[in-house]
Image (cartoon, rainbow, N blue to C red; front, side, top):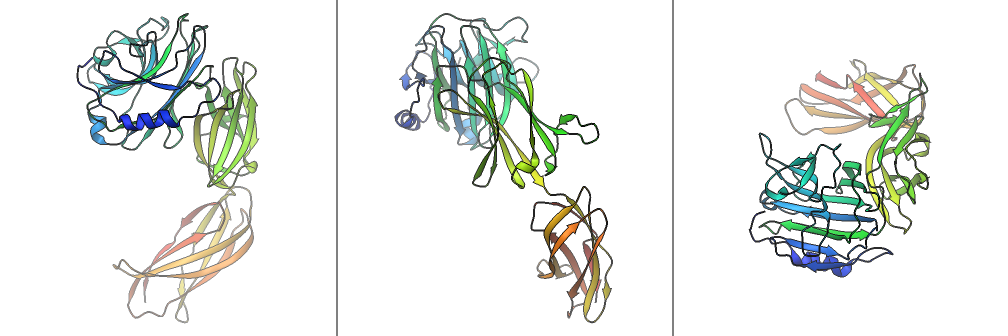
Length: 428
């Protein structure tokens, strides 16, 4: 470990200590000065044979702070109050083993917690004296909020972790491990080794129970031909689709898993799954019809028995009424106007009760500024697989000779519109 003097934003950390509220079973913050380089924040010690789950959030405020960072014990446990949390910790550091150094996140331990079945490695520098699992390479962006959730049950050795891009609510990595048990006192702690103060600890807390933060989950969609559920790879789904949440909790626990749909300022509970049994791999179906239409965020969270909510991850989805093909036929000049036909077809099923609005953008060829004219604005009762023809007229009493004409279409509803032939060049 480097002997450089480490500095962090102490004022922010003190503020966090003063303002954190503590639910039942949640530890309080305290400062810890160790005889090794770094700034450390510690929580109340955890009694022997007591499960513990840590949650820490970091924000990187400058590129210099990222470039000069030597390492962080993002969330971890120590066996002594005067030692870094190297018993079990999620670490951000540089890996020097191999052909090229890389920076990223690791799960490390200097107490031999990892079984032989795991692909552990050893390194020098920040990870010297420890075994570690390389999780993934990652260089944070300026302003990014990174969240680490780490759970360990010393009675069984069961461990779980979840690493989130908390700025966007995305899970970057989650996993569960069967490690070796431990029968002593544990000290929750984090530590930062850097010369640059541009790293903020936004939150650090612990609860004295296990949280299934490493749960494996994914979304499925029903194949209409086979009636089987398959992995959902699409961003857009029809509102008539049958969806499912596949959940593999793996361990006996308590509390509730909840799937929530968010759109703007509205939140809707979609599924609530009691976590009172060993779930293993289960599939929980729900209909896209029950979701808000348009772009939404589906968030999976866990509500522990003490009422604390843990975000496990989220995914974006666009629930649409259908896909509409829009084709502009060639136009004709008649009575100082351009007249044409618009052909509309629905690719899948039927789209009903939408309002068609077509805007023509007219500009002289080569110019950057033009004018907009609404050429169609009318309700449509039904669009099906049979072509619906809508006439339109573009007034065109212009002085110049050569124009670029571009059409745009809006249906006033969440549909996927595929436009073709919507650009023309007009010689007047």
